[in-house]
Length: 200
Image 1: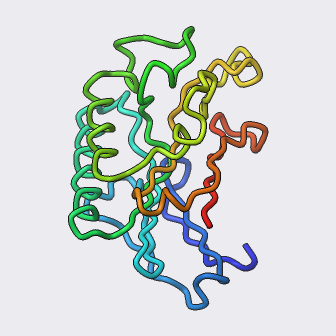
Image 2 (image 1 turned 45 degrees about the horizontal axis):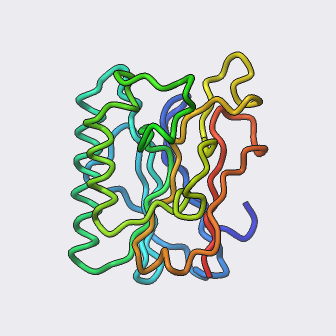
């Protein structure tokens, strides 16, 4: 992609993540890294000055729920390390957990469904408790139709019967510089929609 340093970390036909860094803010190619808990090509990070941005694809948990929980536990420790060091962090991507019932359409609310389980939600709240702000909800706190994923059948996307699984979580110091965080529902052909945060 012209004007960007591009990095793809993935496997053919399965999980993967990518990062694109504007050459306007990083004239030299930055170093892309993976935390120690990288599993199935599910996290990549880049440091730009004192800011670290990590793109994440949390396991769904349907095939191996304990692996999902271990990943979230490790992500919590990762976020805690940045909080302890006073370093700003952005965690973004598909977290595969709907934070609250408000983040799931009433027709899709299932108390024992993976992605809505209390233990998953508790871990996500713990991660956010490491000084992170959920920008999507911060900018649109009362929107009960704020979804980013729609089951790919029965025109769910067109009817906006979905879940909010994709997030931009930013350290509070950086969140104060955010001017927008919107779901781009009309963009792309995936069953997920991009979430774009803008900072000054």
